[in-house]
Image (cartoon, rainbow, N blue to C red; front, side, top):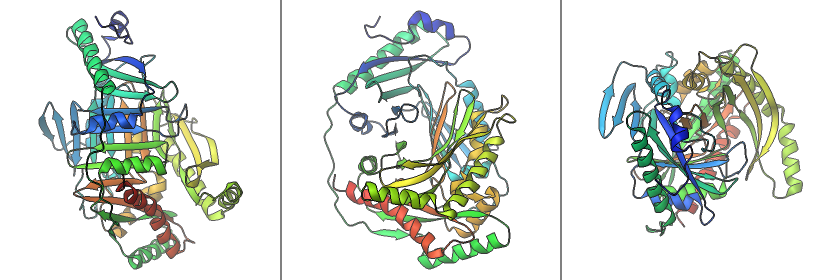
Length: 493
């Protein structure tokens, strides 16, 4: 047997064989010689599909772990209702089945026990559900805008091997999910050998910054003119006056030609915009780099949580100006009213899948500080009903009210009417659903999609009755500029 220690042991793991499809076995080592980013750099070029989930703000509850996964054993792609399920290189196409029900059924059978000593994510499905996933829930949303990006509506990788870095203990771990069927002892030994191989690869890596620098002034285009956006805001305000909606989020998409290497964009976002949710997803056709501040939904141990963010102002240049800006934000009646509206929407969403009387708002209108911005945040939580699953929780919340509006379905109908292009990733969710019953997802904002030698950034503004159209347009530009600046700086790496 192996000299390295594994949790659970061969004997202890045997008690989990009857009720689960997978058993996660984990080995750890102290690892303070490099960062997980450098580990990822050493691995990503050798693998077509590679994923990195990080949290730069190293809190214990939020973002204690960072995760790497690559070479998924299965891939699920959903496009226009058609499911392509790739297993061992063979693609099975499924038509006529609701994709979310299909995924829900997969989650029910692909399970593992929660093992003490394993990282929070020990194996599971990692990827994204785009904004347009809502079309598999709400039948009213039939007017789909033009799809020019042509990425999957849903993309999930089934990952049975996870590299994790614990920011609290500075330990690096490798978890291998072994099948519980067949020869258990043989499966266990093979799992330890595979973990050893990964550990050896990590400890001997040498990263060299390959690729030419491409320092150019970015050419930035928008899919909508300023005049068109302002006209859309005026139309939205008319719909508010008519009583159709209270609020709607209208977005603007920007594209940058000839961007630098995708992972360098992620590295720059990580440096300039550290956030609770950092992610890089590399596929054969495109890459995603993001730094989202906002949770969409978390499910863990029967508790469902969402954290709406609404109300933003820039940080000050010093401590004195910081206090002034914080006070200005908390005294902005428009921002506060919009925030309360979205908290109520969050309570309604969570209430759809929670036990009666369990929905609470333990945190209301609290200022959270980020590297460049102040946000007003709240936390809404409930106890997930026994007859509800993690996919039910996702369906109840996606897309977030902070990216759609209120009432949600009517606001989304207006978005389809006014926005030129299918939103795709923007306003959807990125994260994971683990084999052992944890879902942790964020809203896909402050995110760059890199595809066909172009980088795409999308940003929106919440439109209410007293919105000033030009100010809302400038809010979209300001949000996008931070991402565009990161792309520009990434070309210098």
